Each structure stands twice: as structure tokens, then as C-alpha cells.
Image 1 (cartoon, rainbow, N blue to C red):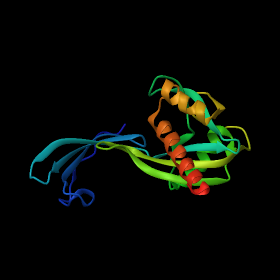
Image 2: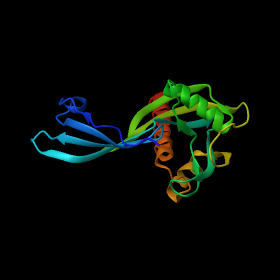
Image 3: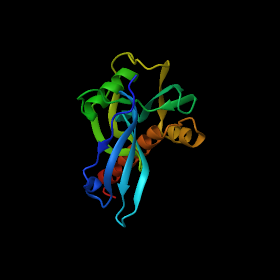
Image 4: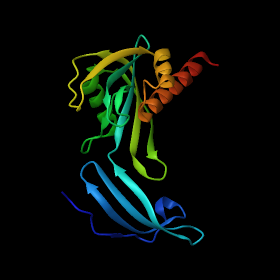
Length: 204
């Protein structure tokens, strides 16, 4: 079990081109490959010093919104220990090694559901927490989804693959049957993209 790493001295340069300057960073908790917690000392543009700004490094992950040719959404029902109950989710998972997000999305869809898809669209990459970071979510829309095999997921909990109409999926968002923000945002982004595509096709 690894203890906290030695302090990392900041460069004194603005963070990411902003006017916030990271003076130093100390790793307080490190449990590879799952989590690392940092305490940052930050100098704000007005000169104030913040000695206890905490950021969290979690693994980056992908979320896939798979739609069949019939317009049904492929979802997974399983127990999730975050909300601590059964929930429906979009296929998702961590990016492994030097995988690209697109490759991880294809792998996770196949492993979790046994489905593959003909067309893929990247819907953006989003920091989970605006202040703490907590990993990056890469969202994809997969259309023409079709079953090509059986799930081979190695998740801790057993899961059931289901097909839901878009209307039912939206109702599950409102009812709480979809309780993870990553899945909720994935569905919303997919519907926005589908709406934009429909408008473009119709010329509206």
C-alpha cells in the first residue's frame, strides 16, 4: 500500500493559460490505478493565496449511447455502488493503457452488451467536476447498433442488457431509474445530436 508521495513543487506558471498560478502540489492519497488526491497551493490573480485547494485524479472513461436501426437505446441494468441500488446505465468503462477513447468505446460496447455499431460520432469530452476534476468523460453516439455476440463484461455485478425506446429512456431519467450523471449526460447529448441531424436533413 503506497503512502502519500513527496510534494511536487509548482512551476509558478499560470495553470492552463489562466491567471491562476499553482505554487505547489502535494499528493495526499494515492491508490493506483484508481484515485489520487492532491492539495494545491494556488495564487489567484488578485494575489490571494489558497493553501487548501483539493483536486482528485480519477481514471478517464467512455460512455456510449447505442441506437439500433429501430431507434431503440441499448442499456444495461445492474447494481451500482455509487447510488447503492439497481439502475439502468449506458455502456461505459475506463480507458485502458494507451487506448484511444474511440477504441475504448467500441470495446466497452461489445464487452458489456454484445453489440457492435456501424457509425460512431464523438459527442465531446467533459471534466466530471469543474473544481475537483475527478476524471474526464468521453461520450459517443453509436448508430446502427446490432447484436453480434454475448456480453463478456468483467464488472463486479451481474448485468442484464435491455432495449428501451427513446421515450422510455427519457421517462427513466425523470423517474430516477437512470441515476448516474454520466448516463444522463450521454443520453442528452445523443438526443441533441439526433435532433440536429434531423433538422439538417429536413432543411428546417
